[in-house]
Image (cartoon, rainbow over all chains, first blue to last red; front, top):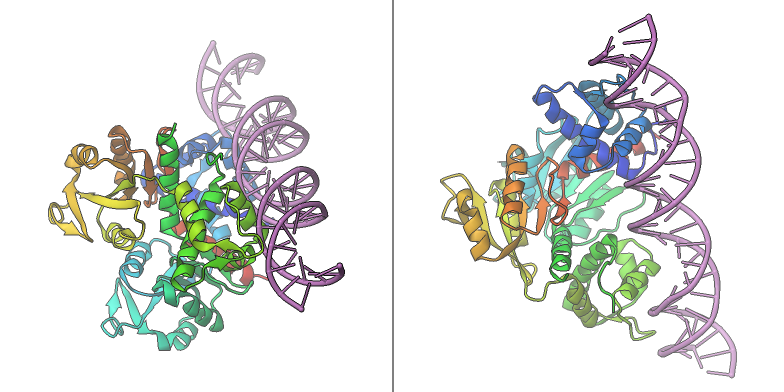
Length: 211
Length: 211
DNA sequence: TAAATTTGTGTAAAATTGTAACATTTAATT
DNA sequence: AATTAAATGTTACAATTTTACACAAATTTA
C-alpha cells in the first residue's frame, strides 16, 4: 500500500472528510455513501471514491463506507502515530485565538508551548499554554520535542522568527503573518493570509456586481 | 482590457504581490524586477510576469515595474471602487481576533458590524465594531449595505447562519468554521479551515520523518 | 557596437478535476 | 430464487486550470 506521495489536494480533502465523518459519528450515523460525503463537500462522488481508493480503503459494498473505519484509515495516513508537538510564536490576539481554537481538537497534534517577548505574558498560561520568552526558544523546542510552529508574530519580525525556527530544527511552519517567508526546502511551509482570502471574496463579489 | 475572468490563483497572487509592494514603498523602493518579486514569493519570474501581463500592465522595460503604479493597477482589479462592507458573525475568540486583525488593513474593505447572541456582547463595541443581536441581522445588513460576511460562529450553527445570510442578500462568504457550507451558486464561498492547514503541515512533516 | 539583462508572450507540459462507462458486488423486491 | 436496483472500484478520456519553457524584442550597460 503506497500511502506516500498523495496529491496535496487529496490530503486537504481527506482532512476535511474526517471532520465531516467525526460529525457523522456524533449524530449516530455509522455508514455514509460516497455521494453523501460528496454533497456535503460540494464535489463529485467520483472524486470522493477516488480519494478513498488512493488510500487503499474499501467500503462495505452497497452500504457505503463505515464511518469509524474510514476515520481510522484517514488517521493512519494523515496523523503521525506518536503525535506531533506544536509551538505558537506570538501571543497577540491572533495567536491566542488560534491556540484556543485549536487545542484539544486533534489528539495527535498538540500546542505545547507559546512564545512572545511581552514581559506581561512570559511565564503565564495563556489560552491553556505556557508562554515562554523568545530567548528560551531553542531550549524549549528541544526539550518538548516540538517539530511544528505557527507564526503569528508581528509581520516585521516574521522572517527573523522563521530563521530561528529553522535553526532549531523545526520541520513545518504555518505562517499566519502577512509576509511571505523564505525557508529551506527541507522545511514544509504553509502560508495563510486572511487578507488574501477576504480580497478574493471581494473580487468575486465585485465581479458579480459588474454583470 | 479584459480584466474579467482572471484565474483564481492569479487573484490570490495579485493580493499577495500588493502586500509586498506596499512594503517596498515603505522601504523606499520604487522599482522592482519580476525576479525580485518572484523571489520574495517563492515562485518563478515568469509567473509574476504572466500575472502582470494578464492585468494589462507594462513595465518600464529594463527598469522593472513601477511599484506605485503596479499597486494602483492591482487595486483597480481587486478592489471595488466604492468599497465593500463586511459583517462578522460570531464574536468569540476567533471572531474578535479576525476583526481586530483585519480592520483598517484594507481601505476598500471595512468590517462595519458584528453579530452574536450572547447578551453580554450585544450593543457593545468589540474590537472596534458594534455588536448586534442576530435577530437584527436583516435590518443591519440592509441599512449598512453589507455584501460580505465572515462566519466565525460555533460549527453547529454555521449552516443555519449561512442560510440567513443568503436570505438577506449577502454576496460573498468567508467561512472560518469547521463545517463545509452549502450556498447557492450566485454566492461566492471561500472556505478556510485552520485545522486542515495544520494537518497538511503535519502530514508533510510526517513524510519527512519517514524517509 | 556588443553583450547582458529583462520583459512580453506563444506554446508546451503538468496537474487536477469532471464525465462517462462498465464490471462487480450487495441489498431489496418480487 | 431470480430479478432488479443501487453503489462501489476502476479506467479512459476530455476539459480545465496552472505552471514552465523558450525565445524574440527592447533596453541598458560596458
